[in-house]
Length: 139
Length: 386
Image (cartoon, rainbow over all chains, first blue to last red; front, side, top):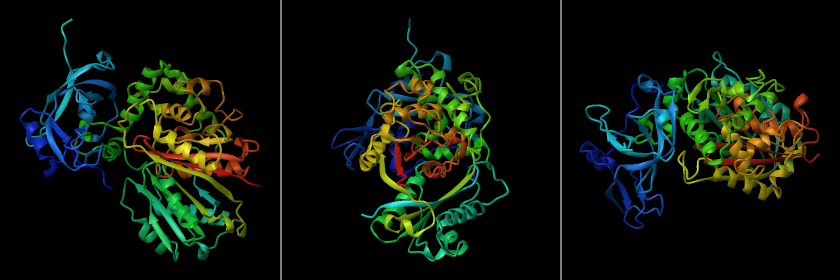
């Protein structure tokens, strides 16, 4: 295996085209099983809950809560310029637990259970992407 | 089904081998294992090879056993299952022997990790996550299994970080007595561990298994042939394997149910309880994984493994010595060979050949491997019947 060159970018595959098209328009969508209604993230071809290949695309609220988080100080080469940065497991309102970058927050101010919402940021001209950030509440 | 025994082992000290190619690390350990077993080249009917290297793509299953070792085989394959590759390879060999297809089989692993720098290594291991939806966020194994799991373990149980660091202190104490361990300088206290630099908050450098090179081999034989060879047989008394429908992301990061289930299956097959074991070589790539695995084995209650370690129960001379070899954090971690190194330590102990780290009268030992954020596992229980 050769060291990976350049950035670690998502491949915008044909099967996931609806996701990337929606993301480009500022919508966060995923697959829902038509048989058992389980919502998956990332989008799946086969339902991890029941195995069905009957699926539909559904909108996600883009809101959730942090289950766990860390501040990454050793990172893959293409991320060095951004380090240190925060990644987290976020429980989406609709159920799935996902891995994501957290932006616009310091490690010290974050807490387990913190409410977060999605933000959108293109990685290149062609590749849209997303992150999560704290929901600012008036206190 | 036929019984299986390990009759030969071979290994090199864990370290950095920049001047040796993968097959040049593997050939001597194969020879050592065959000599230890007293097995001739013609008697080997199978070879299952594990090779994983970050500087070149190797195709050992094709040319190493055939062209390099000159073996004529009835079974030959490469087996990979991340940190459980040793268990996967051993099972392919053991099952082929158990059904009577072959009688003697080689299992050998080489894993080179030091000839690439950390940022490039992290770029490779990013592929253990979802390539399109997770890896582009910059997630790392260290961040998830080190940082997030340590955070959740302390969050769930209110345990002090010092208790987690004690597993590394214990591993270093044990490694000091193991000539093949790479990290033998003693760490006096948990503070020494927690004074090392942060790598993925709150996880510190010395809580993480390092990257190392290693090569190891074992020879398996049908139980009914075990006494035909010179090597002292150590029997596979129980095998257990389980893979959760989860990779890194699980319901509760403070638990590792895949390891718990694999261990229960192995113990059930062996007809024993984990507390009957004389030693266990556990696959714990981070300080916190050590504690969770002790809890999954049922040796300590949830959130209590730190206390269990602090009370000395897992040290040499304790109730159940854990990682007498030094474990992944101190013996060193060539990940694709680490499970075989654990098996080899158990064989050494059960044969009473472990020198100053010998556990007196050891007859029953456990080794294991794990993969996908430790959500899948292979567990082996070995027995000495002398």
